Amino acid sequence: MDYTLQCGVVWKAWPELAHGALVTIELTVLCMLLGLAFGTLLAVAKLSQRRALGLLSQCWVEIARNTPALLQVYLAYFGLGAFGIHLDPWWAVLLAVTFNSAGYLTEILRGGLLAVSPQQRAAALSLGMRSWQAYGYVILPQVLRIVFLPVMNQLVWTLLATSLGMIIGLNDLAGETAIQQSLTFRPFEFYTVAALLYYLIAKSMIVTAQASGRRLFRY
Image (cartoon, rainbow, N blue to C red; front, side, top):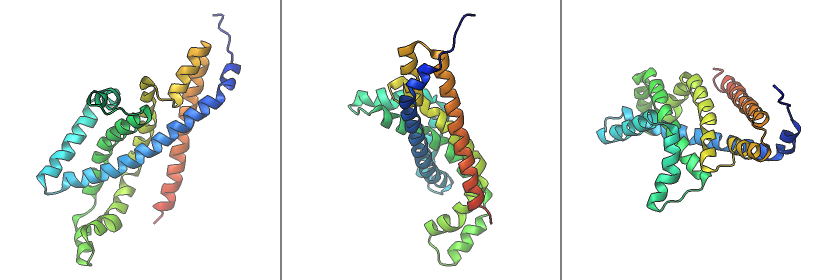
């Protein structure tokens, strides 16, 4: 083996890699927040007595969980384009990864909702709360405590799933890495650094979330 590492080329491309990392973090946070919002609504719908809402939720979950995330990105970018809806790669990834994450989060949150005693909602309603108030002030805080660890796993998956954007030209961390290694022909250096950055971002998000969780769920 006569391969010689050239870390200098990675340092020269650091501004582009840093920008790509920021795009990755931005997409991850937005996809996770939107996924939690949709997942909560879908979980409640799935447990409701209204059959149409339950069917809609079930269809979303089945499609999101049983089709490849890569295919979902292609459909958001190329598939919608066939109908005249041309999304920027950033928006296509946001749509696809949010759709995917919401499907998994729906089942996570549904399990959390089932773990909370039905008497909790009945007690809240008996105190004069509306249904949405009972969920917002009584049920969901307990659900979030129960599902905290599974949601953290989904956060990491969401971070890694955003890298699929490189196949449609998104200039995130994975996309910038692919561009720079193609310009310099130094794939080992760039992909090693990219893997390290993904690891550091994931660990930072988990540590931050755990610290927040200890503060929020200290009672």
